[in-house]
View 1 (cartoon, rainbow, N blue to C red):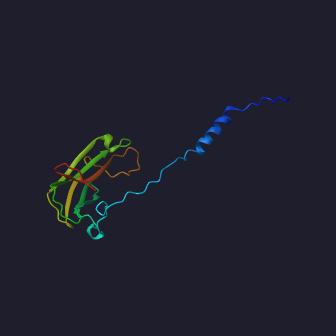
View 2 (cartoon, rainbow, N blue to C red):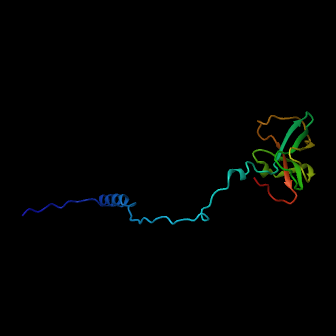
View 3 (cartoon, helix red, strand yellow):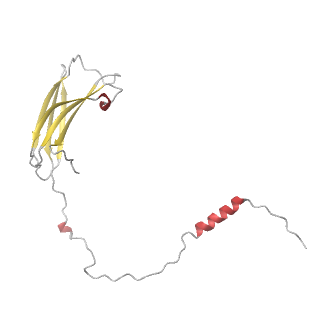
Length: 173
């Protein structure tokens, strides 16, 4: 009688074979096919006809824009508008506000923490298509001359025009 030699099979081989076997039969299962339940006409939900769905949403939509003009004496003139570009009248008591924020690099505007309100314009309604002009001036204190902003450490001023609702609610898209 002939004896077989002992064969050494690494454990990794068995792990690989087990994994392949597991993956091959992972998606195999038994299922029962059931007929769909019958639905009555009242149970079926349908979409409304396209004619009842509005093509656009009718709402006010405010848009702000402004231009900053600097003079050789450090006087900054800001000319802006608050416009209702929406399809309905805007009827919420609000306030347009001009702000100047100051920064000295490498600090950011929020790190410097210097902010000044330059002007405000209160309004309670704005008809669709109408706009409000909003102007103000700001004199830079101790102004000497305009410096190229590429020079490191040059102070910077950022001007902002925003609209704030008096009831402090947020604007919705």
